[in-house]
Length: 175
Image (tube, rainbow, N blue to C red; front, side, top):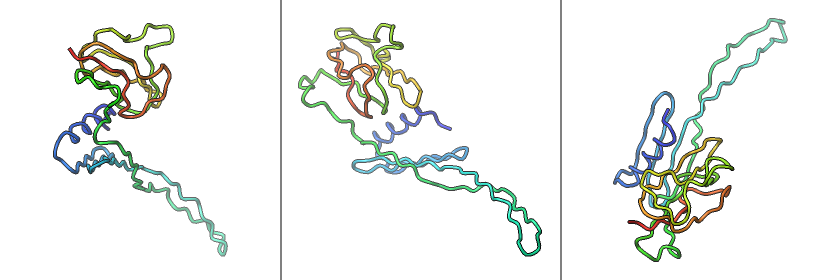
């Protein structure tokens, strides 16, 4: 099964390419991405095990046992995501300002623990691979890298705030 980071990378690559449809199947998992003007859709099959109860014949008193058989039900799980990341027009008047956006829905944390120092502060220089925050999603703490080098100009969210996919978290003045 693919890891969430690998799926994100596939989505980014497809978004940047001219591919309209992408399907990946492995180990019973299926990912299907269809690109349109506004949304990408991913589907995943769900395996359901349904035991069949014992049935007793009321006329003869005999008991008929039906074996428990796995039943496969494919229920598409749709995930809509904007193809283009939203820009922060009102804040990004200067073309040298770039935003660091959340790659997922989750809870924003500025430090690794409540007593630890924040990863970054306004005025601090960051490199492309520097961790700037953590976004917690489904009990997993995901370190978010800057992906741009420069100086942190503004932190746009508060510690513990829920963030959306593509939501700007920081403004960075590029070097």
